[in-house]
Image (cartoon, rainbow, N blue to C red; front, top):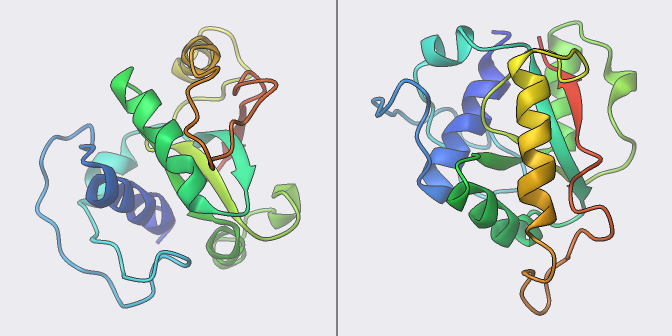
Length: 169
């Protein structure tokens, strides 16, 4: 049960943006309707085993009211080998409550977070895969300057250098 949200978000990323899980192509099956809030249709679920062997932190790049604005950002990072996806703060609060995690650490308000598709070790600890990924996100994020299409959020002025880890397990 603790991996449910990570699996659903990872599946939503695969379905929406063509990204694959670390385990490669996995058989997909639909979860209950409404499993992902804000997206309209339910996302397909992937094998939880691939998510289970990963770390316990997502890296959060941004919070925004409309998940559509994340589209160009997701594409930019995917082109640079980093898979991201949106997660509803409403769903995340439910997940934290269901799994006895401290929901007070979540940002206030509604909307969506842009997070890594995979979980990593604590990005605050030097030498972890999370620390290395956060550095890579900072590098790739700096290259996003001026690339936001007209009508989309640019996520300036920091261009994701303020990404942080969120413990999800």
